[in-house]
Amino acid sequence: MSEHDVDDDPGGPRPRGRSRRRENTTFACVHCARTVPANTDGHYRNHCPFCLWSLHVDVVPGDRASTCRQAMEPIGLVEKSGKGWQVVHRCTACGHRQPNRLVRDGDAPDDLDLVLALPWL
Image 1 (cartoon, helix red, strand yellow):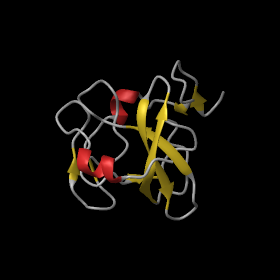
Image 2 (cartoon, rainbow, N blue to C red; image 1 turned 90 degrees about the horizontal axis):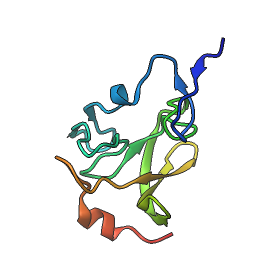
Image 3 (cartoon, rainbow, N blue to C red; image 1 turned 45 degrees about the horizontal axis):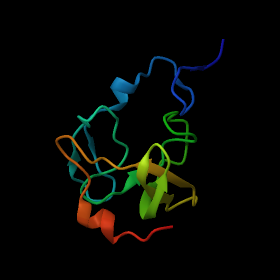
Image 4 (cartoon, rainbow, N blue to C red; image 1 turned 30 degrees about the horizontal axis):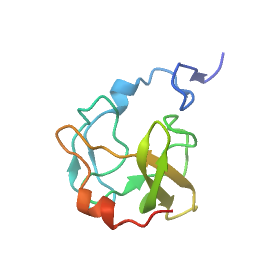
């Protein structure tokens, strides 16, 4: 038996017993220490809406398999078909880069001024 269940999510497998609903929880930002509320727009949040920083927890989106666990700095924007604008994060420890969907709706959307200040990559 595998340690990961494969599901329908294109982000890849997650550890057994972990649902996307359980991943969409309130957390404290690793950079600014503000409390980040769970997302309410139907997607789960993986970065702070107040400073846009993230935490390196995934090898592939959603798997929570990274052992790095260090802060990820927002370094720019890309546009991806079907996902729109995405913030690109770079891990401050290992250099891993990961694009992440912007949160535009819900109770705590991403700070638009910070998003627009990022360079296009």
